[in-house]
Image (cartoon, rainbow, N blue to C red; front, side, top):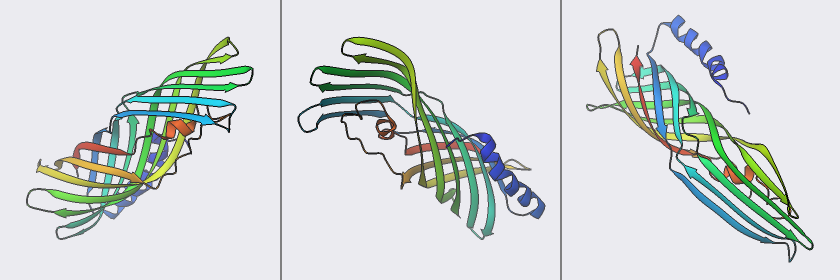
Length: 244
């Protein structure tokens, strides 16, 4: 599942044109920076199926999910202090968390081992709705949206078969969708012909499926099942921009 800015624009441009034609509502354009929980996850499993072969797997992911992105919103309904916004967002990873993976598979007369060291690239795209309520101190909002993700790990792999070593470059990807629910607080300032805004939001993803981790005769190798365990699902995001 590829995610890129071109796909996002194909979705948002018709909405932008419709809004301009209708000459109604309010536009929101901004740039965002997000930080996800520090990924410092260690997955260690021993598999015995039932007695031989014997598998040992260790997978360790470290680093934080820092993301930069663009934000577009259009207010489709405005009634008193209440508003309904259609919002889109595209983000890319600014940091590249690292992953270490080691898998050993012992059978009678044979030893197989794989060691992998790599770093992550991450992209996401969001399209959703936000209900807002204007207060004296600012604007609170509740958002629900469909979010798609692409994560790829690339790095150097060492494979050992009965004492013989080989080396190569290896990559594995994990793509998924979830539903993002977020709470936000926005402060605006009148700049004459437009208003500037600062928005802070806290979001959590729900409903994504995670491949099962089950080390065995085949799962000792690096795969998306291990990558999925440490995918980014929550973040705190700061968005700066203008309302027109």
